[in-house]
Amino acid sequence: MKSVIGLEVHVELKTKSKMFCGCPADYFGKKPNTHTCPVCLGLPGALPVPNKTAIQWCVMLGLALNCKIPLTSKFDRKNYFYPDLPKGYQISQYDEPFCLKGSLKLDNGKVIKIRRVHMEEDTGKLIHATVGNEDVSLIDLNRSGVPLVEIVTEPDFDNSKDVKEYLQKLQQIVRYLAISDADMEKGDMRLEPNISISKDGSLPSYKVEVKNINSFRFAEKAIDYEIKRQLEILKNNETPIQETRGWDEKKQKTVSQRTKEEASDYRYFPEPDIPPIRWTQKQLEGFRKQIPELPHFKVQKYENELKIKVSDAIRVSENIEVAQFFEKTVKIGSKHNVSPQSVANFLLNKGVNTSNITPAELIKTIISTSTYATIDNSKIKKAVEKVLRENPKALNDLRVGKTQTLQFLIGKTMAEIKEKIDTKIIIEEINRQTK
Image 1 (tube, rainbow, N blue to C red):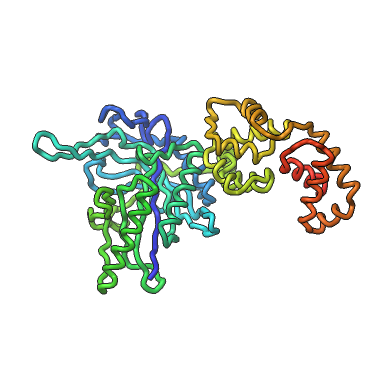
Image 2: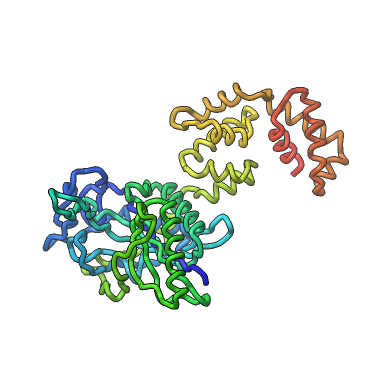
């Protein structure tokens, strides 16, 4: 038997206003029901006006996830009754979303296919409380109408570890794009795995969706528990019920919430108050140019061009502000013979707060605490030139792939310089002169 897991991830965008009205989208911690208007309250006669920035950010995320962007898309009404949905329907997308058929590659080489990235509005929030001796459910509609992007994968996962890595990479991309803080504790990023078990490799006839997950660790726990629960049911020759379950952290288990709806239950139809959205190739290229260098490209660059360890490259690129600080520091450090690896080591091991120090100041600190001598670049260059000129056989051996001769050339160079120096700087210079 094999686990079959797909993911639905919702990301709230940090636009100034909501998706279809002018209410402030920054609702967290605000007094309940103070960021509302006739549109997000669903009052009769109120008409939606799409948020241009939110739509553009959705498309940019799709491009960052290698999606195809159709030139025509539309909004749809997703009809269902729930107390936190004042209109009785949600404006979402169904058959013509903004982004289709993307992918995200994991560190183990596995490619997770992304079915769609679409735009919708968030719902209100139910708050369960006790008033006097009575249990009640209160509704805060401040969140109603906040721009929400949904990223839906194909059922390509078979274990919780890969799910966790995918979620971390997705969160990182969202933060690089600066379209959301993706803070799971605040509800900026919400996860809903769909889990089932295949007996023979075919797609199962049911799936169980798990909600109420607000951390990567909880996602792992919920998936592992649900796989175990479903396997027990299947061993008794029964089929798990297609339903929505919630993760109860206190009980460390999933609990049944309601039977899961099919797409037909929502009675999707085109949103009559919003015309189709159309793009030109020129507009899409403009969005593509706004996308910064993404984490996986930075890792490759740091490893291949700057010659730092891949594990350090991954850590340095986790946060775009840290990555940008690192690159500025490396550029300054190259003028003072401070290697990129030395910068990475200092940043990662010394707990440097990049908001309290400039790249130039960090280089001074690295130099002052280093046991290596600070030597002019020209002196290193001349020493390497002389060693290579006087040892043609070693140079030839290095060029044909006999890497053991590198240590011989490093030793000769250090003897020529007559001062203690970081060998990585010598290696970089030898590599430059032997290309």
